[in-house]
Length: 149
Image (tube, rainbow, N blue to C red; front, side):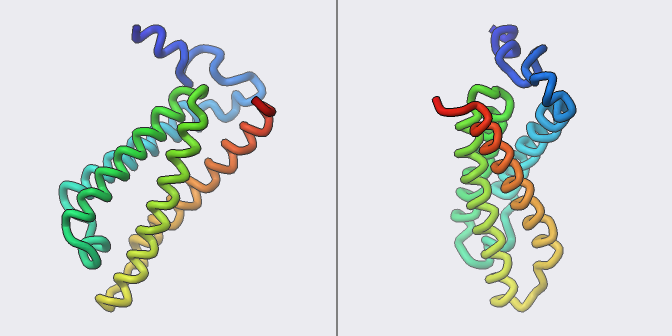
């Protein structure tokens, strides 16, 4: 069963066309690892709190948000790991982008409420959103190249 799963994954021999071979480390390492880091971050946020959200909402809301973020990141991981599930990755990355956008808004709002600087966390959150947007553009280009279904 594991061999069958691996043969369908991004890590299978021939999963990446020769024309895209220069992107193999992006697809086989960078994208899956980032999704796992996002999932771990969501779990840590749920367990230990998310300060920007805790300032605005109840602790339970940030806990639910953290676990939801982790779940969506794992959906993205599955989508990037199995190229045939590219649509799953698009939905997941879209949801992650929306959640990060909401987090950025919470950081900015929280900075006005608490009069503290959120510049450091924003400097991490904004590039994450940009990276996810960039991945979504790549997925849409790949979908266009596949043609109509």
